[in-house]
Length: 213
Picture (cartoon, rainbow, N blue to C red):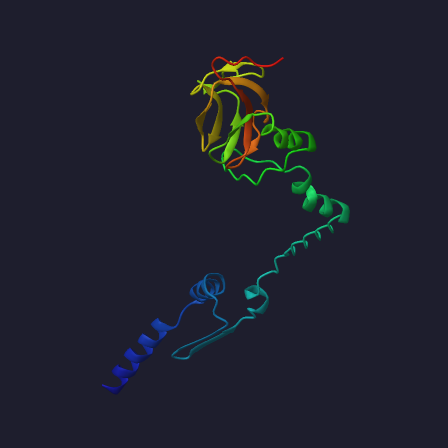
C-alpha cells in the first residue's frame, strides 16, 4: 500500500510541474501583461524565481512644458496725456438731454446784463422761465422742429405761446403775460435755463396810446 501511495504522489507531482512551453508562456505574460517586479513559483521539485527592473519602464518620459511669458508691463501714462484727460471735461463740457444734469447757467454778458438793467426804466416786461430746462423757440412735432413761435419786432397777444422749456423729454409752452411787441429774445435755442431766468423782453402795448417813434 505504501508503494502505491508513493507512485500516485509522484505521478500527481509530475503533472503539476510545468513544461518548457508553459514556463515560456508564463514568463511572457508576467513581463508583458503585468507590472510585477518579483515573481516566485514553487511546485513540488520545480522552483521559478523571476525579477524585473521596472524603474525605467514605470518612469514616464518627461513632457516638456512651456512657461507662459510674463505680460508686457503697462506703459507709464504720458503726463501731458493724463493732464489733458483730467482737464478735458472742464474745457469741453457738455450736457446730455437724457440725463438732464443742468448746472447753473453762466451770468449774462455785459451787454445783456446792461439791457436787463435798463428794461425797467424803458417799461419792458421780461418773460421769465418757470422751471429748469432747455430753452426752445419752437416745439417738436413728429421728430421735426416747427418754425419759431415768435420773432423780434413781432406783435404778440396776451396768452400767446412765445417759446418752450424742454424738460425730461417734454416741452412746456411759455405764454406771454401781456400784449405787445417782442423787443429782444434773450436766449439761443437749446440754451440751459434755470428758474426765473430771463427769456424774452416785451414792450407792452396799451389801447389808445401809440408807441413813440
